[in-house]
Length: 542
Image 1 (cartoon, helix red, strand yellow):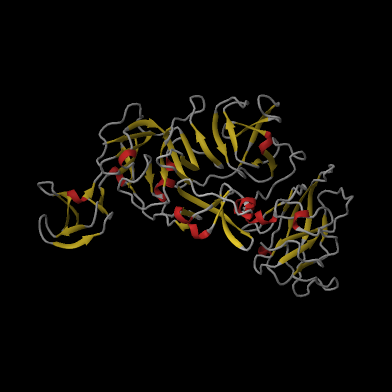
Image 2 (spheres, rainbow, N blue to C red):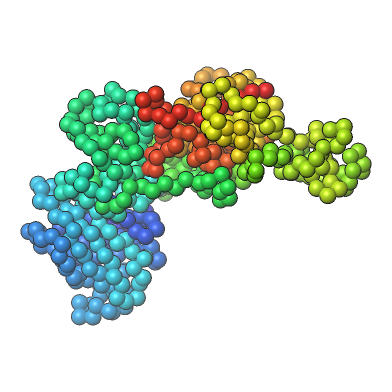
């Protein structure tokens, strides 16, 4: 990490001697967070020039007794790498910015909320700089080594304002400061109906006094549910917007930082102190992990995992998520199929092969031969039916499914999934279900819980494993789900520990398509009789 206390001559204010002495504040740049640090009223604010990587110091000319609001002040000096001349604000390396004081709240801890506008006068584009200070409430700075945690440095809401200055019900939205449960009613004993992720935003529409497990008010948010106020701050930004994809979405999800632990050579450290003390332990079993950052301790490089633990990079084999995907079913014609293995293509049924299709090739069935042993996939192109996985259209609805309701049909024998709206097939793909002792059982159940990501763990002595951040999971039983899979590319064959494995692109599409709908900004949603709607039915059969 670049030191944020290395330059000692920038600006005219006094500067703490070490990074530990600098309180933290939320910043937002145009693309990513580069540093989190602020000295306080009248001190130097430091950030990183993203274009050059150099430390930048910005001196706010604010008096300690300032109580003005909505006024502008001119920055005396903005420098990159060295002080610039006061007499020549356009000297090389200098930029001029304006700082608008949006809100100042006087408290013993001197909370300050300001909004900053960067206006380039010379040399460096303003998009190369961090341009916002948000609610600069002095707090203890963590160990600077841990500032490399990518999760803690992700972009923060640009419109944060002090919650006491603007009531949550009057703000355009409320921002969640951490992952927080959403309750069916204003009580910690009420049913959990979802989880909103950190930095998610929602509109607050009602408040109730502190009661039943919440030390502050209970806040009702749109579209439904109650949240304890301790997890919220007011925001000037609008509520989080939906980012749902349609069945015809053709983009490949970006799944970054995933890998498989090479158990024989791996050593896991619980945290920085554990690694520094040369502690650690062997992995308990098979592990799929996701790295969210890096740490350097004693000159050695470590990957930081989502739970804060550390592992040496050589012990992790990067995962390459599958690019396989299914297809939209057009005009309700379920005429798609996939080859089971490399399959010959014949000019006529039973003739000589003219070419070979690779395994898992997708084809469209045009007609069947008279004896139904071959199907035509193109002009003078026939493939043996036995070489194909061919979905069979449902002829009647499963019990309890409405005429236009969305549901899943999973064929265990052919490893196929078809998504339906009533009796109309709309999407088809290959899956991987449970293998051997972990065979996926037949089921007729509804999706009860949806998680955008979740960690799956089996602690049994005979087969221990941990799979981090499994994406787009739809649980229809307590331990069984349809979910995205980043650790293999064997769709069309049995492979899992019981769940229905989906390729990443299919998982994201079907997660957004299925019920219950996940509101924008929510990481999870639970179905309850009182909150509705029902989850999509999952029919698994042979």
